[in-house]
Amino acid sequence: MFDVITIGSATLDIFVESDGANIVSVNSLKKKTEFMSFPYGAKVEIDGFSRNIGGGGINTAANFANLGLKTSTIIKLGDDEIAPVIKKKMEHDGVDTSNIIQAKKDLTGLSIILVSFQGDRTVLAHRGANSTISEDEIDFNLFKNTSWIYVAPLAGETNKLLDKIADFAGKNNINLAINAGSTAIKKGEKYFNNILRTAKIIVMNKEEASMLTKIQVRPDTKEEKFSEFEIHPDVITMLKKLHCKEDSIAVITDGKYGVYCYNGKDFYHAPEFSAKVVSTLGAGDAFSSTFVASIKKFKGNIKKALTYASVNAAAVIEKFGAQEGFLTFEEIEKKIAQHPEYEVKKVKCD
Image 1 (tube, helix red, strand yellow):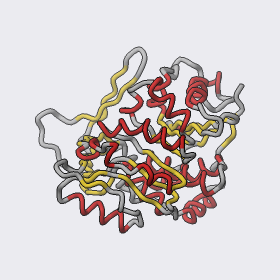
Image 2 (image 1 turned 135 degrees about the vertical axis):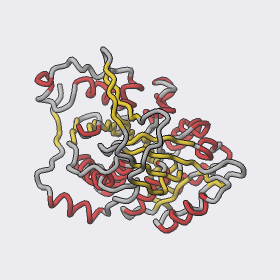
Image 3 (image 1 turned 90 degrees about the vertical axis):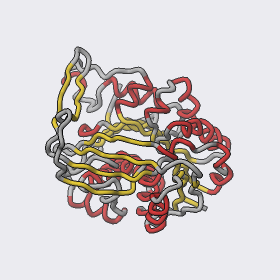
Image 4 (image 1 turned 90 degrees about the horizontal axis):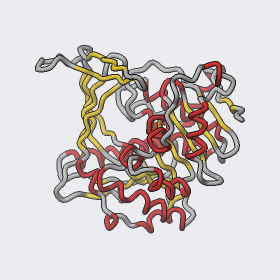
C-alpha cells in the first residue's frame, strides 16, 4: 500500500547560467511580456553549468519520499544511457521504481534550462518518452493500492490519460491531486469539467487558471479596491470556477505575490516566503507536492499546508536544481520557528 503514486515526466535537466542574457520587456495595451535574449549569431560565455534529474513526475515523487510518504512513480524512460541513471536516483531517494515504464525506441526526456541573472529561467524541453505513455502501459488496479494519486503535467499523447485517471479515481474513491499543465488546459473548460469535479486538490499558476476559466486579471483594477481582501477580485472569481467539488481545494500560485486558495467556504492567501533566488525551477513541484503531503499529514488543515508548502518551495528556490533544496517536515518546522512573522491569512470575501 502506497501513500501516494505520482505520474508525470522524467528528464535530464541541463542548467546553463549566463550573465550575458538580456531581459527584454514588450508591452502591449493588455499585457506585458518578458523575453530572455542573446545576441544573434554570437558565442555566449557560460557562467554556470550543471546536470540534474528532473521532471514533474520524479520531482514530486522524490519530495513525497523525502517528507516520509511511501511513494511510487509512473514515468516512462527511454532506451538510452540516461534511463538507468534516473532509475538509480529514484531508488536512492527512496521511491519505489517497480512501475517505471521502459520505452523500446524513444529517448528519455531532456531539458536545457537557461537561467538568467535574475534567477528566472527559460526551459527548452524535448519530451521524448514522456509524451508516449499509453493506457495499456498502466495497470489501473495499481491505483487501488494508494491513498493519493498525484498527476503532474502530462506531455503529448500521455495527456489523454488525464480524464481516464480522473474517472478511475472518482469511481474508486481515491484522492486525486492534479497540477495541471498547459497542454491539458488548452483542451478547454468543457474537457476539464470532469477532472475538476473529481480532483480533491487542483493546483494551477495564475496564467493557467486564466487560460482555463477565460478570466483576465484586470490590470486597471486599483489596488485600493481590493486591498481589504488581499486577493484580486478576478482571482477570487477564478478560484470559485475551479472549485467544482464539495470537499475539494483549489489553489492558484502567483509567483512573488504568493498563493491563493479556496475550499468552497474560506479563501486563504499565503504570501511568498522569503528566499534568496538562485533558480525557480522545481518550485512549483515542491509547493504542490508539499501541499498535498501536508493536507494528508495535518488532516486537511489548509493554513498549515500552505505554510509548509511555501517554506519548502522557498528552500528549492535557494538551490541550483529542482530537487536540491527539499526539506523534511522537521526541517520545515525549524524554518517556520525562525520566521514567526510569516502568516497565512484567511481572507474575508463577499
